[in-house]
Image (cartoon, rainbow, N blue to C red; front, side):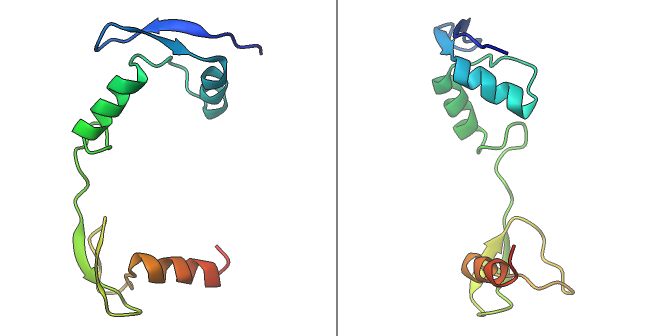
Length: 100
């Protein structure tokens, strides 16, 4: 399928913006069926205002202690006693050593 650049109008600011052929191809590859309704600037402003989590607000973080190095860290899930929690560095090292 051949894509061509399209001019769209932002629903927030009313300015026209380009929906490029490359962006259309990306949308098609991802299975997105709707065209963007906001320009890049308005999308970025909206993400920042919502904590980069559309519709859900900022992510709640939970304090934890790394099971490997003992360092205090924060994780985006509520830690459970029966599962180890790792800081970012130890988690990445764990993933690398397990071949993930």
